Image 1 (cartoon, rainbow, N blue to C red):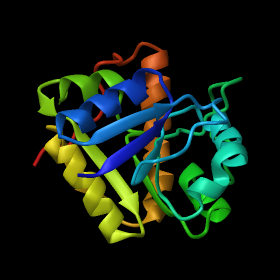
Image 2: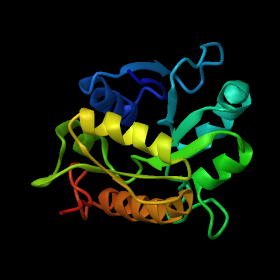
Image 3: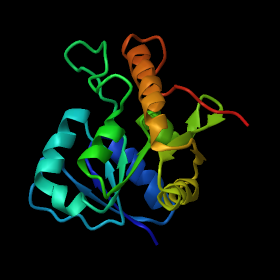
Amino acid sequence: MTTFTIFGTGNMATAIGGVLTAGGAAVSHIAHADTSSAVTGDIVILAVPYPAVAEILATHGDQLANATIVDITNPLNFDTFDELVVPAGSSAATELQRALPHARVLKAFNTNFAATLASGKVGKAETTVLIAGDDSDAKATLAAAVTAGGLAAVDAGSLERAHEFEAIGFLQLTLAAAEKISWTGGFSLNN
């Protein structure tokens, strides 16, 4: 059984934890500001706003140095809500991989809303979690946990695809914030 440590206690952390526990995984949560809890999961999920990642690295970086880490962040400029704050052509996940070169960084869940993870549906379509990363075993393990929890999972390629994931996530968030789509909607894949 795969175990997960989720940094975060908000809607996304709760929804992701629900999917994983529905599939039989053991899940523990750590509030991002908690500096004393140990990271115990086989896979660590950063279900926090992008600015909190730096805090987590500062307090738990040694525990994450060789871990499998899932970055769900969308690196928005939260002041303007009008741009991504990572270097052009990069991504939050790529920057995380640079900070932790021996970790197995994956990008996933950032193109999903919490409501679609909890319901398993985007409109009438099944919720699909896109996964990108350079470690095929880590991607397969996450995909297995997601599908065991009742959702679809698609290996979307290398960690370089995180750049496109974050563009999709950015567009989806700005559309929802402008009430052009609902927080229970979003993008889906049909086979």
